[in-house]
Image 1: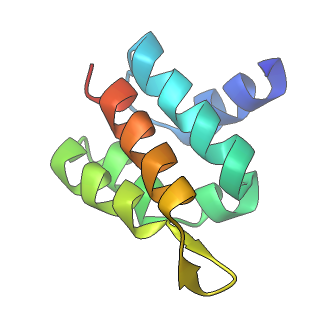
Image 2: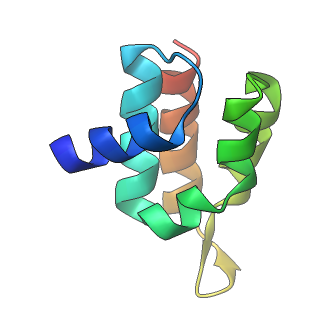
Length: 84
């Protein structure tokens, strides 16, 4: 977890709350750092465009090319944390 927090600190150029960091940790632990590093989610966050970030979270619900209700639920939990 500490490694993930360091990666977030290195990649995110705006100040985040603890809840926002926790949401990103969850996302990274699920999808991977390379996906996050190159994502529109990160770009939206770095623009402080948190409304777009929420939309970007919701795009990451595919498992083997098919929508997954488990991933959709996880993204909604992350969004709840991110907007807390």
